Structures are given as structure tokens and as C-alpha cells.
Image (cartoon, rainbow, N blue to C red):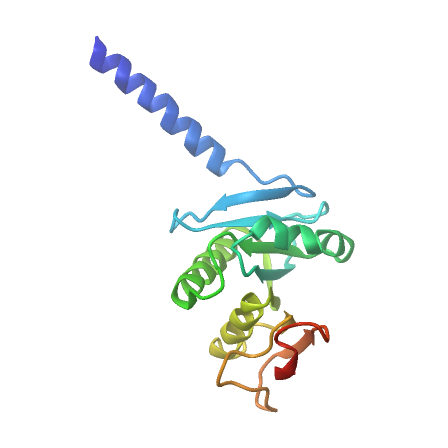
Length: 185
């Protein structure tokens, strides 16, 4: 009897977890943590515009915060994403000083969103703040034309790299004269 009860409780808990994971995401709502299906140790914050429907392709912005605060990054651009009809995702794992960790987070987030959402591939963008901006530029350089552009805030290209006419994406950088990365610009 005890084993049957344990099995029943385990079955209910497992089915509740599956139901939660397969439940559609509510458009127009910031979701602080989406677990990547293939790599459950990776999560990202998500915003789908209120008009989102899988019946059409949508542009997407992949964001990288220097402190792995995906929700903060998504919230910063949520209103613009709603107004212009963009999906926004931001890693909860990518952070300054951990390039291998950030690459894995980006790969997991990219794969997961490509599987779950209707993405307009020619309108994929990367953005980041500080080290997240460097990561966005590094990813864009290394993917050879898989993104349309990078929006960089408070940091430039990765160390040892510089802009050139051979870039296969548009690049926009914003920085302030009090920014400690000011001199590189």
C-alpha cells in the first residue's frame, strides 16, 4: 500500500511538472524563468508581444546581462518590444567573466527558442550590457551571418576583435563619457 501511494504521488507530481512545461506562454506577460527543454540547467526570461501567434514569423532579440539577470534585461526593452512586435529573451545564466558559461547559455537559449517559437530568421538580433555586449558581438561574429544586428551598450567588441567592413551584421553601440569602457570607443 505504501509503495502504491508513493507511486501515485510521484505520478501526480511528474504530470503536474509536464503540464506546467507544456502550457503555452501568455503573450503580453514577462515570464522570469523559462527552462530550456534540452538543457534544464539553463533558463531565460521571456517576453512575447501581446499579439504573438505561432501562425506568423516574429523577430527576436537575444539579450545578455552582465549579472545573469534575464528579467532585468527583458524588462528594460519590454515596452519597445510590445510596440514593435518583437520577442525578447534574456539568459539567466550568462554573466561577465565566464565566456564558456555564457556561450553555453546562448546556445541553449537559441536552440530552445528556435524549437518553441515562430522565429523570423532574418530578423534575429543580439544585445547586451557591458560584458553582455561583448558576448553579443562575439556570438554575431562567430555565427557568420545568422543575426541581422547587434545593439551594444557600455562595451564594444570582444578583446582582440574590431569592427570591419567584412561584418555580416549591423552594429550599433551606445556608451557614456563616464563609462569605464569609454576609451575603447
